[in-house]
Image (cartoon, rainbow, N blue to C red):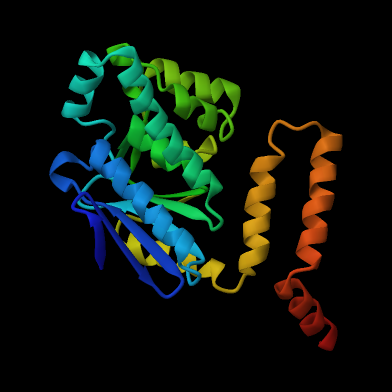
Length: 255
């Protein structure tokens, strides 16, 4: 296992890239170093043709508890320009997760709160242990999870998003799955094995087809029907020209 910095561990085994938030003594709280480490790891994924799926998890008991105390102090004392740069850094991370060609899976154990919940939400898929907790408590200290809201609103209904953001309460993994924030909930005892089995589902898929599908899914968000279908036509044609599609059709016709 290699490390991009001490706060983030990165490794690749088979077709899976693993990004581990490595501040267990701080509940993997977000700071500049950790955010930079995740970005660096995602750049490594972009350069590695072996990777079919990325999984992000937290060392220790929690996935990520949000911004750490030093980051909060920095916000309180920063100028408008400094706060803008800081906010844009997190925005860039969210965009990198959405723009990465391969699927990104958040494997959440323990708490995913505030920016940590935002990090999980920004991933393409969220797998949670049965005891995991999710929440956006920012409003309790007068803060607004503004960039996260742009992604959260695309994951859950308007009313569920409103409740999560304005009440600042934590919800269980089961409730998070019910409202569409989480894809699957696994037992605490078998979580690691269940996550690995889930990731294996990407081994037998076409990497180019998954890449094009992810890109299309996010591109059509906000488009009207005609524009979405036109975009679909373009991607459909591109998919037909890929080697994976040609080989897949040939294999199917031989049956």
